[in-house]
Length: 237
Image (cartoon, rainbow, N blue to C red; front, top):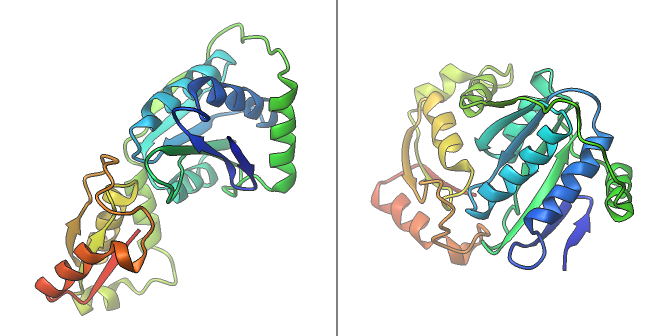
């Protein structure tokens, strides 16, 4: 069963969120997006690779230029859409669901998610299954390998961040990213903030070594690492 909600769509990759399902949602989203470039990113689930390729192929076929950010946190896709000339974004992620799941989120030109009306229109478009003509020329594809770095630099430059005060504290921080999309971003951000970072489960390979929800019962490795290294704090995502 495919779950459709204000958060987009989500389902089991072997039975519900198939490549052809993603293709249908990509085609429908294309009709709703303004003319222009589309950003796309995914979390670290292995299933995301095929789903991303499928969506990119569909969008290119309809003449869309697509920038792929690769494996990035969802807020990084939102940031890149808002801060560039991109008109929309697609995020392939199932958040804290187990590895058997994946999903799609859709981002508006201002970096916010589709609202309730947008989602209803998208679902209706998918259900109608309107025939769409391919573009006379396919769109262009561009990879962007630096979106996490751009997002991190922007964050530490925010006026509400007292960078010197944080760096002077010389925090020691443990990060448990459950090998998810935050595996690169969180250590990088904390390093920019002058923290000594100890990373566990930060390979970014989608092999979830613990329960995907950051619940107390799933944080044994984090607690042990904080105690062992006499860290000031531990973070889990």
